[in-house]
Length: 308
Image 1 (cartoon, rainbow, N blue to C red):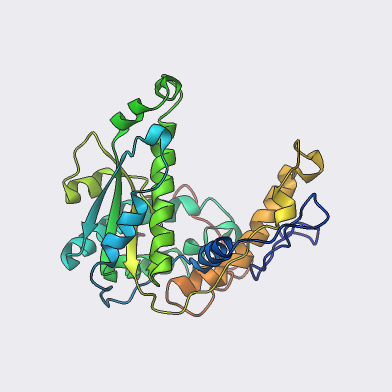
Image 2: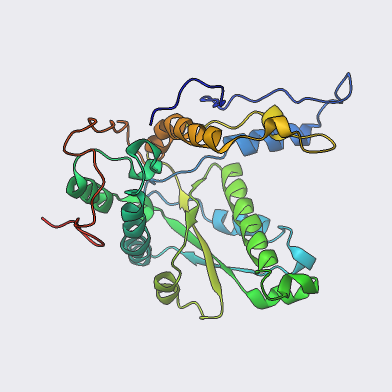
């Protein structure tokens, strides 16, 4: 399916939308706000790091800022494991490749090439694509890695409803997401790049880091300097996402619009994503009807490495 030219807006350059105000004249921003907005816009996701060390004390400065993050009832459920040992970082990255990248690679085959996550839009046949994935160095050369842990028992400090069966551990995961963002922003303020590495399968990483079974390993955040200068990505216009007094039904996208949005989203972010991996060439879509255009059928190689 190719999206048509219906107006599903994508801003390829990340240009800021003018701030709309209900007042005829907007109040001037503060200097602190201007600095904060500049910092938020300067933050970039990095997926390929130089091995160069970061300055002494910067990791602790980042975590000092992070510990002031808000959390439900000030429960502060986070703990951090700082890893600098190169062999341990390599082992963590291998676990990431073996358990998370491998699973995502096969699951992404469900989608048309143009709709796949940018990390899995690859050239060549299935075997060639799998070899490319396995050959990626990724964040294995980052000089520092922070594992963000959470202790769900600290959620008991919050209101009782968040601990009600069926309501999930929302204050725990909210707090860990908040503190992870603080780490990214603090790193950016020091000129250090970071990556948000989602950990969907915790057990291999917990074993490597000796994390007690009761704790959650929420996120891994590599820190360092990018192999290539990072570029910005688009953001939705402010006028598209803000509603005043009540929800504006006219802004509700249909499911068809969402699908077209996803096509354009993928097209608009692929260059930024490729650059964040330290690469330059944008993968080309397979030839329609060609030998590499089809996802594997039920008799295909299945989980694990492709069969030769």
